[in-house]
Each structure stands twice: as structure tokens, then as C-alpha cells.
Image 1 (cartoon, one colour):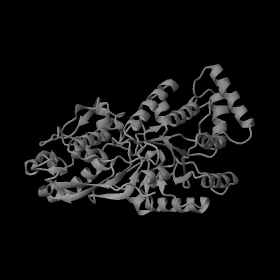
Image 2 (cartoon, helix red, strand yellow):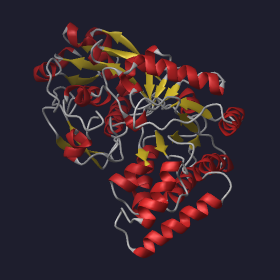
Image 3 (cartoon, rainbow, N blue to C red):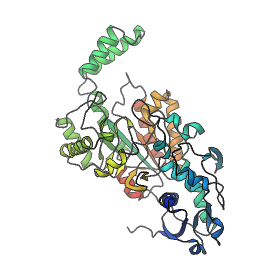
Image 4 (cartoon, one colour):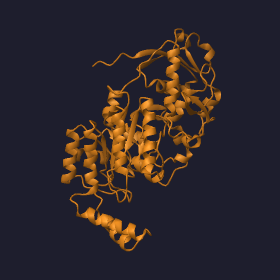
Length: 470
């Protein structure tokens, strides 16, 4: 079917030359949810309407929407400050949204600069603080300081832009996910193929059961020992059964999902598993034949190591027969200078690492795909981010939520994605239904699937969902 023809909108970026790439990216990102094509022009080309972004909004006459760029904003993006000049909250459509930069002209604030700040990951590039795994900490973010981690900040900017265009007689059509207005992408990081490895058996039976290293009550210790012995007596392994059950739960609801597999182990944070075993060979075949996606889960050190990344991608192709285009790094390790560039150079088209490890929500303020921006080269990469919204271990372990609280938070974030016709990307590891170690996690997965199905989301792989939306 031929896609609808894009609406051509005149756009003027009237800024100093060094700021042009950032300004154009910002305007393009504001228009990204709509089927539109920016037509770059000067201020005189806006007589019949369009968008003006620049330092002289008075130069644009007629029905153009004018976003004034202040000198202090240009100065900010010429420097190395991570915290934006403003973090005041404004109400847009009933939501309190942080404003980063003031403006003149028609706009109540500089929504273009704010969009660039969020989607480019400016705060991650300019903040030197990192956690023990080299990750940008949630505690250093605007989302933390303003309490807006659950708000898709950029989508509210885009909503404001859409309304202003409609007021001026332009009615851009929003992109959809095929026949659905929003998408739900379940993803699974396979960190281990087995639970019952020798070290785990020793931990459960000897250290925690007999020696009580975890200082637990006798009843709890006995329960863990009985559970461990019972698990050992069952055929197969709980982590392998979870891999198959996760796939079955998605299939029965008419969907597909993405599995990320590890092929490398270069340090103590990695657990090696064989790619040539009969179980994994069979499972790769089942995923491929049923339209599920096989992606790479780069090992702990591969996020900034080009040779490891190349070798691991080649190993995955050799084992699965699939040329992976999607990646999510182990431990969500992400260096904004190195990781996107390496992924792009190695032929990846999709990353889905950009969620906070410590919490849930919108790390770059968006629930829509967006191209990653290289601040060193001052250009967008041909690498799309499918932003991670919820990781179950962040919900249950880092946020310390009970099942009912985890579901409430997850459903609220799903509602935010649905409100903005976005994509909800969730991460569930293949440790679900292990009621000894992760009680309630399996139920959380199933009930999240049910919520998506009831909301008529497109339940698909990352690659397929992005193809439909683009």
C-alpha cells in the first residue's frame, strides 16, 4: 500500500552557522511524529505559513509559528554546562513539563532547543559523573530534579507544535504503527541459558541453606532449599522454560517480540553460554520461523570496544543465521560518544539501551523512535533509538516495588505511550516465573501483555514496529 503523501511545511532556520545543524535537527524532531516534509527556506518563504526558528522572529510575517532563539541559548550550546538554564514547570495539556530555555516570538518557551537538549542526550554528554558501571546516573538528570521521569517531555512539546500548526491552517497527519495507533514491544535480554549452574547450586544449598550466609529465618531457608531441590528435579532448566514460555505468551496474544542474545564474555560481569548447543540452535530456528527478532546483547565491555562488538555480531550470525540489526548493551552501559558510533559502524540500525538502570520512565523524554545524534560530528546518525521504558529489575529491585505497585507504575507509563501514539518498550529477562528469586515477575509480564492487547497496541518486534512507523 502506498503511504500517504507527506505534507510539505516551509521551515526557516535563521541562526548563526555553527548552530544550524542543531537547529535543523530540533525542528525535524518536533515534526517527526507527523507525515510532513520540512522545506528549508528563508523568512520570506513563510508568507503563507510555516515554522520560523531563529534570532529575529519579527522578520517572519504572516501565519508562521515563530520560535525565538535567545543569545543565551546559543551560548549554552556552545559550552559544556550539563544543566539547562531553566527547569521551571509549565502545564501543557494537563501535564507539568519542565522548560529548559526561554524564548521570544509566539512560543511560550524554546521548545526546539528543549527538544534538542533531550533527544541529543546533551546532559549525558556533558555530565562527568558516572556510576560504578560507567553509566549516566538517574540522580544527575533533569528528570530526577523535576520529578518528570514518567512524563514523555518531548511528546508534550510535539503536541504543542501540532496544535500551533492546526491553528495556522496546517493539519499534519500523525504516523501510525500500521493499523494501530500505538505499539508495545516486549524485549528479552538472555544473560544466562541456565539457572542451575554449579555455583548457583552451591549458593542455594550450602551457602544460603546450610550455612545461612544471607542471615534468613529457618522457614525461609528451608523454603529456598526445598525450592532449589525441586527445581533441580524438574526436567530442563527454569531459565530455558522461561524463554519458551515468554514466546508462547506473546504468540497467544497475536504478537511478536525481540530476544537479545550474548555471544561474548570478557569479564566477571559476563556469563558465557555455548551457541552450538541443541537447545539454542532449535530456539533460534523457532524464533526466525515465527517472525520474532534476534538481536545482539553486547557483552559488558563491548559497549565501547569495536573489536569485541564485531566479533560478537559475527558469532551471532554464525550461530543463528541472522544478521542482527538491533542491539541492547549488557547492564545498559552506554557511552554517548562511543556506543552509537560503534553500533552504526557495525551495521546496527536500532539501539534500545537508553533506559535508566535505576528507575523506569523516559530517559530522553520521548516514547517515539528517534535518530541518535553525534555531538562531536554535529549530525544525526543512521541509528534509531527505540527507547526503553521499563526494565523489570528496575521496578522490583531498584525501585523496590511490590507487584501491585509495579503494575500501577507500568500501566501509567503504558498509558503515557498510548496517549502520545508512541511505543512502549519493556524488558523482561528469561528469569521469569522463578518464584524463589523473583516472585511476581512472571505475572507482571503476563498482565502487561494483557494490558497492551486490551489497548489494541501493535505487539511487535523492534525492527518491524519501526519499519511500520517510519
